[in-house]
Length: 456
Image (cartoon, helix red, strand yellow):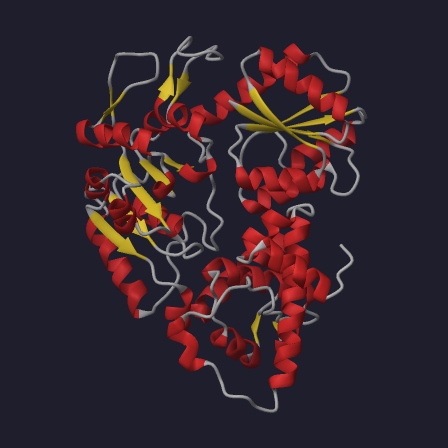
């Protein structure tokens, strides 16, 4: 069990961490909402304890962001203010419980365990899809590649065969997994997802296979593993390429024998779940490099579905944009009806290295600044693309110098400045991590900050 404590008071964070450790519960501390956002992106947490009143991003704003980003772990709101309206607001924003300072640490621990167990028993998804479609909406697109994928899904839906979904980040791999599940005879069963790369290596085995009370220090009760939770439904193993070699052996055995065993137990439990794995990595290259087992690869690669990047199916952009607009109209209370032809033309020319997720980001930003029911080209900001080199395959498509070159150079400079500022903001000024995100060296980042005279 891993808990995130978000409180601007250092003493309170440390006292809570020490008490939870005595109860065998691991925890991390964040001093503000920005730190919490970073930790939530980097680690897996079973629950969050969030202080209501914090400078900058307060607890309610953090919860709102978490729910919008798809984090569905239980949240307990903590406050020194016991007003009823605060509790009601926190619950409306997505908190599952509310506790007032000063509180009994034992009572807090009991509440935490109950909330986490309740979530496991309901077979809720550990990592919700952030794609534009919901689980029941299906795949959006009428391009030739998407039609082929839909045909494959219809043919394999009722087959028990393991499926491997590959493609770049943001192409909708979990959407495909959900569509397979929804189209199968297991649709009434649970859809359980886990992001392998989002769970610390020392916790991954217990998350997947579960454990018995006393299996190791801190195992104060029985935990049901993901394979069991998915019984009668589908288990989605996202980012399977991040699985440590030490666990790949056990995963292979589970897939071969169709049985799993909790840590600390000798009793095998039959698996009654469809297995779908996904990755944005090249598993064949990993096999050749010795970082992924060949026998496990063949067990997973029974049926392969490879998702094309958005830049290879741009004819689907109008359909995708329509779904995105409807979703954000519901979330934001807007009434945006469509996109102007000029704006749509700009979208179709954009490379979309971030795929559907980037399209969603661009349209969300445009809807915020739109003054009419139609998104026009002047509110369409395409400068948020990540800094990256132009692929060799696209070098030939770079236009020759023209009268627009000066303006394009200025836009590129602005793009770099904004990307640098956003990255440093996300990583709270950590230049090493910001440089990694931008795909440049730390020295290059420092030079860019000096070149643009950024006061950061």
